[in-house]
Image (cartoon, rainbow, N blue to C red; front, top):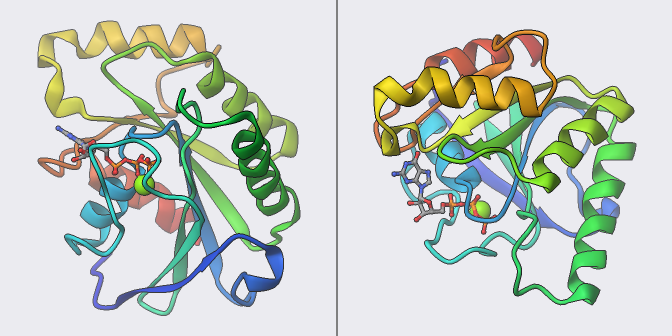
Length: 193
Ligand code: GTP
Ligand code: MG
């Protein structure tokens, strides 16, 4: 997709702040620092639109990015950051749960996981949660530029096994540094919006 227009519509914590449901939404989830905001920027070729940081916990609200006035990417705060208090973790869970369980125009969930490492317990939980809610999802494996090409098959099979997938077809390795793999994710996104 040629992106000619991209803007942040709103940063929302509560459902009454969400934009109207007239456009399809593609939401991203994944642990803190996995590269969700960087992924959005690279997908839409806008360097600093989604705020990124080398420190985990940068994104704190649901950020709705409207693309070509045709659909929205929803950047979701990451999970699994050890320094987050129990109270904030509960707040996070409620915010995500409200969005995922009530949003009728949520068409696709991109589950971002770090290609360099096996999925975490929370990654597996998130995938099972998406399945239990019957939300279509694809698994985007980030930071592929950080491992050797010869290691790709090994890492793909680790993911296939840990996530109990029938094939590796739902796994999409990408790099937000080089842009590799993003075309394939665009194809999936375009099917759902
Ligand atoms: P939270 O908002 O804290 O949940 O994090 P996030 O998932 O949005 O991560 P973010 O996009 O802020 O990226 C975290 C760090 O990883 C930054 O330092 C990025 O530059 C780096 N990063 C993200 N994607 C890639 C990638 O594909 N390759 C490399 N080499 N670095 C990446
Ligand atoms: Mg972020």
